[in-house]
Image (tube, rainbow, N blue to C red; front, side, top):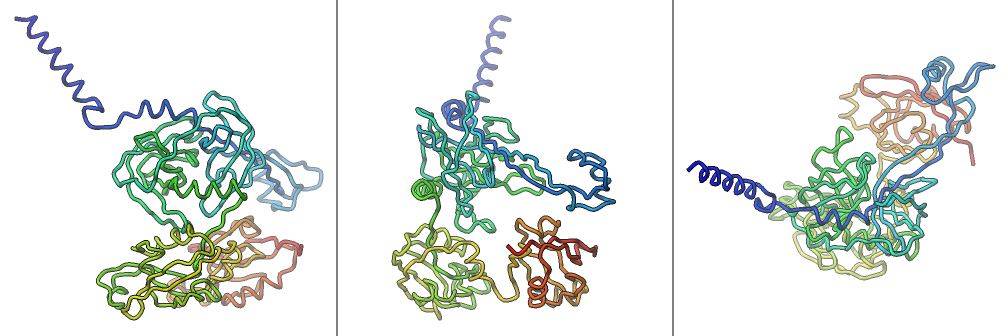
Length: 471
């Protein structure tokens, strides 16, 4: 009797173990996928040489090592940016994957931006130096080439077939830990992110961290459906939201990079906004839909095609436009010079216009074309500023000043200026508005340091900024 009970107990334990296995619970088993795919996933490390000026030291004293407490002491008491220039190297890590046996590798553009040396490390720990075939900042994609033959590759999937709730897996090098695998589900499709208008991102809850950038996102069939690119985070680490570039979009970019080293995109030439519930009601729509044209740029394809401010674009080239963020990717992927049907709603009536798609201008040229009244990009300082509205001035108790909306690499960034800072004065002259700001900046002495009066939060302080030389 005892032996029978023991056997019965063992049988129950086995049943419980089987029931708790991933397969029995309906959860996917990624072991074969990771085993078969890892050899084609690579680690990418970059080196960049940077030159900076250290603190201005008294006569007879030499430069201290970077990070030395003495360096900070002398910077505080003797100033900075006037000493002898020094060079040092910075390093960064990312991921990528091989798309052809002869050595083409995809990664993110931000992984290799401004790199002087790029090293691709394979799963067998061998390393090869890579050259950049081409990069596209707008899609955050780069194509690299290493000298190799018979390299393992990954199978391309169809990102247009992805569904919300579908299981996906990422392989990459978070924080430098090579060939780390993390899994999750597709949380949303066609996400539009700020300043990333031409990529309809795949949103997932797969754990992605610094170092994962450029690595592949797989479906359960082991096919690459995306390239891990960004995370939403307030801490710098994973917080449950990650974004991948659809492989369909990526491969279109890759083909152009391979052929000509750069990417051309279609361009309509409109400034658009979302249709809110209130706007939908005012335009006679049953529900919010489409892209509302707030402005048509002069001499643009849209202007030539008859599109007007106030039109609501509901279809583009046969594709529905449910919301404004859906339009830029559709336009960007359209062949330049191709005539398309653009369906609009104007004065409660549907119309179809024929528009010949142009080529998207370079970023600098586009900024000038789109730059709206009350906002300007000042190339000399490499910052974008905007006028403060009456309500903002009242809240901040200010009667003058312009607010920084973007800081790019250049004098302002080197001086420590940030987005959100308010410039109250330049070279001891009060800044009232953008018009005066542009006039003052234009008169600043080249090659000299001048004081800027800033307000950051509740603190007001002066910052010295070095004006670049004329040429």
